[in-house]
Image (cartoon, rainbow, N blue to C red; front, top):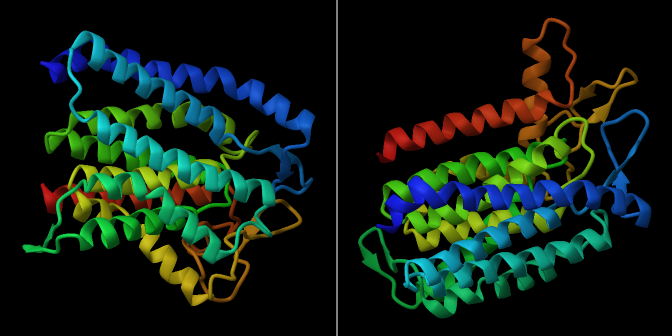
Length: 333
């Protein structure tokens, strides 16, 4: 009954609340960020213009209010409390991960938290899911028992959170990637009988859709680590709660490749490109240390002019991500 009613009446109003809250707060946030000096340089612009930081804050506001509306409807309209502990646990994971992102943003991307400190803090963000012992402890037919909540869950949260932050640095890239992956997970969780996870996923998607016009090229606001950490944690949390770890890992193949390429550069190579005098981009290194560098090289070779513009890099990476997701649906379903 709940599923049919949400599809017919309540699902879209909940999503629109998430969208409208985020969309209405973002212009106010951008203006205030410039007033308070909460800005950073756009690395791929000739004039080095300053762009507002912390765009993830209005997104998380929209997401949180949308989820609270969903909980209120479950409680007062449907008179039920199913999955409420899991919902609050997932929100706890997201909010703690975003808090780590806030600290990273305030310290600046050059300094930021040390890798060890970041990992330790993100392990704590996994605690809400660990203490509930959510998910299935059976992997490849083997029940690993307590190793699942004590080892697999924190590794999944930390891994997805930090890795999702790797593919970044280009206008609209992080936001569009989050929209694509979470939308695909919403479809998967609905198919596998977990529509409540679909609602949570789409609340975040709609809040990020509100952000995208402000974050796409030329960006007026950056999402910041506050959003990329939250989205990475949410991807892992949904995979765990929905018992869809395998297909979620398949969807995450671009990020696994990115992590391997970053490790090739000992995590010291940046994703940013070199800026030409005409405002076009070129690969910063002879070797490839990220999907961004690979995208620049591919675009430069397939275009007759050889010129690469910033907006083309997220586009190519997004196409690759969509192909991986399409393959995932073919293989797993």
